Length: 220
Image (cartoon, rainbow, N blue to C red; front, side):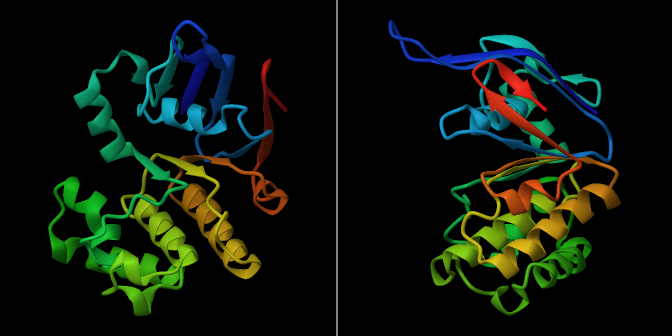
């Protein structure tokens, strides 16, 4: 489903900082992969490149046969909207929308009318323990609640590829276990693929395969 070949990325001007060097990765349909590594190893950068939020210096990315690295900005945006669910470390909830509206946003952007997505949003809010917070604004939530809302939003449109950047970083152990089970279940149920970036041994243990990102690339 996902094929990454010889991906390279650097930042900076004259003093370039190499973040990724010749990273190669294949993720099959239905596979759930964890990527671990030291802080600054480029794990978040890897997810951003796969999602088309950034462009590599070299290498290629293909999702379901679509060459992500050959798409323009508008095409990458459309691909993310339809096929990718992204759980960001910083949540990126829209402050003027309620929790339910934030979660429903990917469905609305994909053209589904409200009656068609009320049930799906409700199911996911119950699954992440936020049914009672559906009408709340993000500022009224704790960090852990915002994390769970962001996870529900990433899953609501049944993405072909789920990308999760430290999805349990703001959660207590019980909530983390619940969310990790949900992420894995959704990948398996929807016959998609998932990549979770994490420092948590608990989170990594839920994956089918654990890879370590180093200066030399991915190992596992």
